[in-house]
Structure formats: C-alpha cells, structure tokens
Length: 190
Image (cartoon, rainbow, N blue to C red; front, top):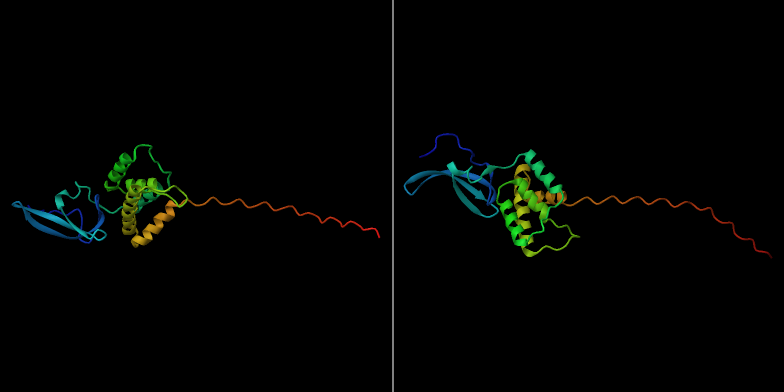
C-alpha cells in the first residue's frame, strides 16, 4: 500500500506537529504493521529529544503543517501586542482552554496564550501552573519564530519579550522655570 504520488512534506523540511511543536522530517520509512505496509514520516524534535513516526496518509489529518509564513507570523505578533483577554472563570477551566490552544497547532492561538499569561516585572505574581503553561507556550512560539526567521531560539525569545513589553510612555518634558530678575540689594544706611 505504498503511495506513489507526491508526499505533502519533504525530507529536511521543518514542520509543526500540534502536540509537540516544531520538528524536522529526517526521513520517510516503510514499515509493516499488523500485516499492512505503511509509509511513515520520521520527525525529530530536538527540544524534547524525541523521534515521532506519523503515517504519511494521516499527517494532514492529525494537524501536521508547514511552519508559518511571514504573513501569519505578522498576525501572531499583532496578537501579542494586543490587550490581554483574561476570563474571570476558574483557573482549572482557563488552564484547560490554554492547553487546548497550545496543542491546536495554530500559531495565532499560541500567541493568544502567551499574550494572556504574560506578566511584566511590575505585575502580580503568577501561580506555578500559570507559569508552567506560559513557559510551554512561549517556548513553542519561540521555536516557530526561530524556524521562520532562521534565528536561534534564544534570539526568538528576546524578540518575543520585546514585542510583549509595552513601550514606556514618554515622560513630558518639564516646563522651563521662568528666569527671575535678581532683586536689588537693599541699601544700608551708614
């Protein structure tokens, strides 16, 4: 049952797998499983030190996609610059929604999670679980930014921090003090 038509992805191509983020297709294998011959993409995820095999016929169905283009990345950066939308529901429910967005494979939804959970230095503390979800989201987003812009993950994290940190309001320049004429010294009678 080996496919002869063109594959959706090429060896050496960076892809995004929804549950694991950015990976690289290192090969295509043919294996016999339960008496069926199946063609599989071999995907390496360096960050997790993991190799995944995905049937070529189901790759798109499971949400595997090419890394985002520049225009999609611009939309993600625009999302990051937006105002955080934190729902006032129980944390467990919000955490579940954030995890769903992280694992969706959508770079825009990933940017929403990063934006909503980002705390600058002067804002309140995050709980441990909030911090864990934030770190997972920003790390995954940074890996995709790094792959799109051909930079290292550390540079991508710095770029994301820059986008997330609001620029300080320029301080109004102080008005110059009016110059006072010196008062004449009083004459002393001798």
